[in-house]
Image (cartoon, rainbow over all chains, first blue to last red; front, side, top):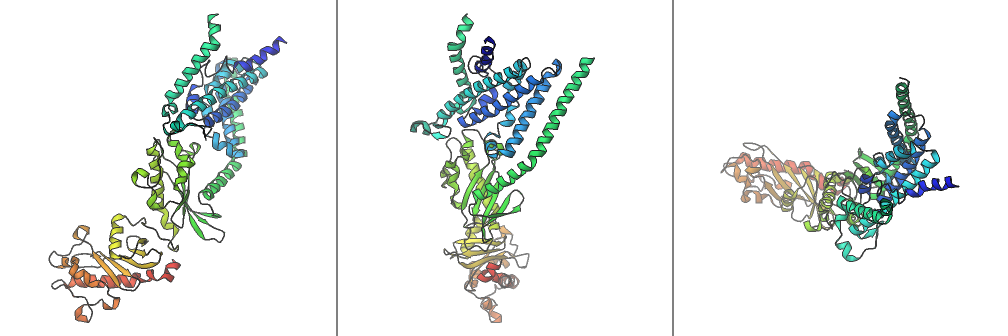
Length: 206
Length: 339
């Protein structure tokens, strides 16, 4: 019974307490680059999540076969193989999806959340735990990046997911600042501050 | 030692499995991907040129001609790649035989577009690109440049690049639309603004011109798109060199006006002597003359030669005769069709 709670914790931790972007502070580069519109952010989130879960599964499955000294090259091979397979398959059988996500797929290789989880978790844990961890981190990553995308898109165009909702003055005077990297950094900073205030603080005090 | 071997072997195995897997996936998906790409291309082409049922690739990966069910040419699709803010902007343009832009398609970032998301990337938005539909060449300018395309706020460079790319493409490829279409084109690839001014002076009734032979023959059209005449260039041998002459010749088989190039444009006749052919007194004699009148007064014709410059005068006269004989079939409508 106690064991089961622990397992689920891997999943839920990734969402807030161990959020890859806001707490672990990894994967900031794709976060900044693709959280410009909500749609792009969502695409990046889904594509990266798929690769993260798959690579966690495979790395965990073969972890006992990989010598310590060459584990990083092997991780990279696993991840980039997955990314390339996703790229080909999507291009061949889901061209509509590929047209939306295509640009993000190659970017996933350099998403350090995936390599980070392979190294820090999947290499040391069983398949089920690694799956749960990958799934939880995926939710955390996608959640943050989409919320950032929504905010940045709203302030820079007055619309969300391409649907215009904003007041007229925002559409005619968009906050272009939000589109550029400083806008992204600012948002990450605000989120980080909120998380520190309401989630992490108790622990560090204790 | 054992661990070193295993290290090498395991890494090798990982690479082997990955390579094997990838080559398998590649071969399995390759056919499908190529099919998708060609279908995608066809979809793109019919997207920007609605109504076309089949396409013929004229220039590989750059120009297609679209045909309808009756195999009638209905327009062109061409690719153009103007320089945007962050790199080239690949654009596919559908251009109808009515000389209007049908639709444009701007490549997505996965197809090579590098514009800034949220700014230059907005050229992809329907709000911007739909502005091009049903625009003629002359309207294809930004509002602030005197045209009718509203630029994207804070992305003027990208907006202007798209406009210029479309213009450039039209200029480069529009002669593929062919001379058999009734609609004419205001300025062709070989008609720049100076040339257009000159052509209109030589054939004053024409409001539009089309280049038939580059730099040599232009046909003129009235507002009903009827051929009303042509302008041709001919360069007979004068006293000191070639004499470049432009002749406006109407469908009523009379000369409208002639223009003889100035020394700055290459005329080498002797000043005070042969050079007098450029004077209006001599030139205007040709207006409203038929081919049969084009003889010197000594020979029963109606052109007065310049005294002391018979060779130059005769060169002009013979040049014009020759030009009319050589090019007059271009203004007979039936032969116009057959081209």
